[in-house]
Amino acid sequence: MTTATPFATGTNSTGVNALPTPPTGWPIGSYGTYEEAQRAVDHLADNKFPVADVTIVGIEPMIVERVTGRLTWGRVLGGGAASGAWFGLFVGLLLGLFSTGGALAPIVTGLVVGTVFGLASAATRYAATRGRRDFASVTQLVAGRYDVLSNPRSAERGKEMLTALAWRS
Figure 1 (tube, helix red, strand yellow):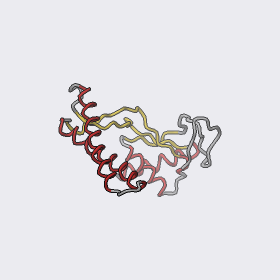
Figure 2 (tube, helix red, strand yellow; figure 1 turned 90 degrees about the vertical axis):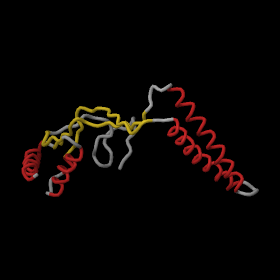
Figure 3 (cartoon, helix red, strand yellow; figure 1 turned 120 degrees about the horizontal axis):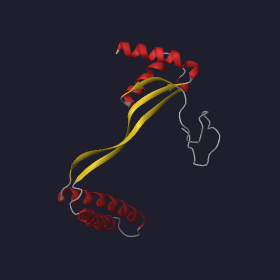
């Protein structure tokens, strides 16, 4: 895996352009899910197709927010207390490692203070919404479909291989 910077030029060690560029190639398959596109490329790889010539492209991107549950004061305060306690425990352990006295007092103090601050912080944030967002959610970026592209020199062969895979499925 290589890391590209916004100012990189040329190609990286794998021969891939380091700058963001639109994908090139001919479409050899189109799939409704990323998993199906992965399976198609895996089929190509298993059958000795030059998969270095293949690109999976997500078309029609959309942001999907999946609601995971309703927020109540109990859930908000419980989550705030838990996250504050973890942070306080971490700080208390660090202080305990470097203190000259006993290690237990800084750990307990960190745990208590972290819990109180976690509760206060969560309560403040939740109260500020005034009931306008009483649910928890997770946001994902997904595509409407996934196209598999191939270098023109091997596109016909790839298309035939993926057509054969579709007939078997």
